[in-house]
Image 1 (tube, rainbow, N blue to C red):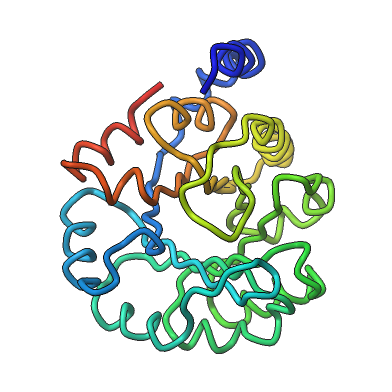
Image 2 (image 1 turned 180 degrees about the vertical axis):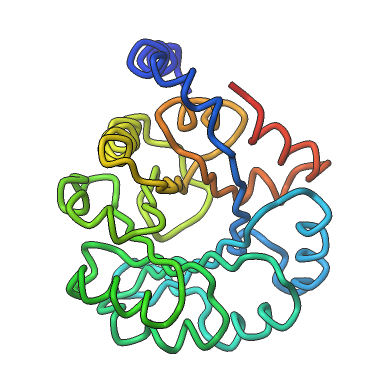
Length: 239
């Protein structure tokens, strides 16, 4: 991050730092960055590192310009671990697939507000399936479109990069969206998780927490670390 970006973060979000210290910070590891030929070994590393959740990115090649993995791999992961499976659907018309991902083992299901399914109906489908409901927005989408649904949600995912590929640089302007969601959730007295996904590392983790995020997705920064345990600690504790 540039000096200008750091100045922007400190001046705009310094007032949130006291509150962020009260949040229980969780780390969700993005499977997209794991060694897929040794996935069970990677899961064992995560289990012993203090990582809280496993973030499973589903991309259909239509909503985003990439294709990743789907139900069969999720089912195998479910059999291999008791970690919370944090499933992020980057697919068009997600409502059609809610029941199938629930049956495959998802604990949290996130869908995109821009993906073409009715938001309220999709939230109901997730809840009816006995899972936690979450909505995500792209960096360019105003959060106003999801604020009315906050009382029905367990989590909101703010994309801090453009969805579709790992390893992108953090977009500082997304901090405004995190802060707006946290402010509205606090106003309503909601126990709402705010997750962030994209470019999370030792420099950006403190900024998103200061803005009000409490679930941080980490991919390449976590999996490429020499010591995964230390990296999880850094993400959780850095200011």
